[in-house]
Image (cartoon, rainbow, N blue to C red; front, side, top):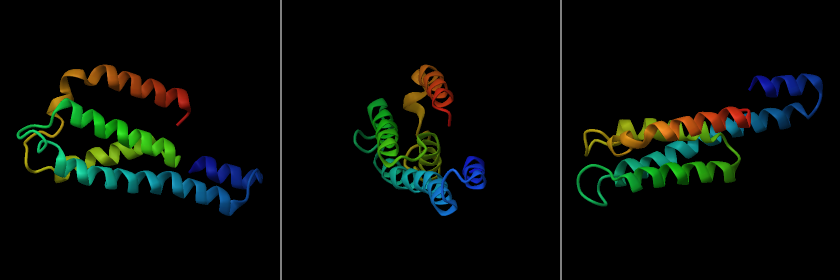
Length: 120
């Protein structure tokens, strides 16, 4: 958002255009995270009864990231919002992210390296 303000002040783009892009980047990511988190909370752990499988968890995360790139919104924010929605809504199993605990470190490292490299 600060970058949007700086671009508007310097006159690089129109003020309305810059703020609309900033609002879309944040608001669109939040909306996408909510829309992806609700089905994930309801479906994970129900395809095969019990705890969610690794394929379910990674499928939703990769789907959310792909859609966020397609929509040109923040994949970091949309994934975080999706996780918050799942943790708060998935009441049919005790630990929604139990399936990915064994493989989380390589993905976290890759995630933050790519986030830093892309200039988010």
